[in-house]
Amino acid sequence: MGTIPTPEFPAAGVLWRGWDDETLRIIDEKHQPVLLFVRDTDPLVWPFLRETFHAMPKNAKLCALVHERCTALYTEVETLPEELKLLGAGTRYHIAILSPYGLTPIVTIDPTGGGRPAEIVERIVALLERMLEAWR
Image (tube, rainbow, N blue to C red):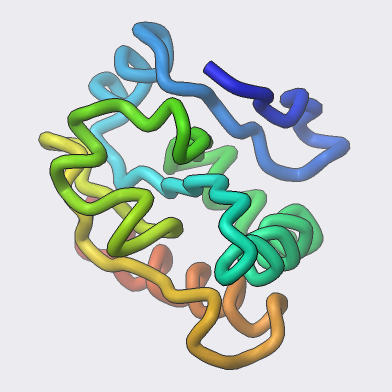
């Protein structure tokens, strides 16, 4: 797999996990939604993805949700697992909240759709909080 940001939780705020057997085991054990981030250097989407990615660890609520309940999954479009490609990751969406059952997208987030990166992260937090209330 490509370069994954070094997991420096909690200093960096979000512990991003790569696509591997250990991550899949954690997802299976937690039975909680998964926050997916697909890095894509396409110049049409990368500036938005980059700024949203940098805003994520600055949001304390997001960091707490990922640390306590969810799994944060990071992959690059060039090494995207076939399981995620088939469901539209890397083409139809780059940021999504996935079901732990089959890693199907529950909701996708479009960072190019307007709003500052911090606002996009707030939207992600609101979606996660709402889902997790019902997920118990």
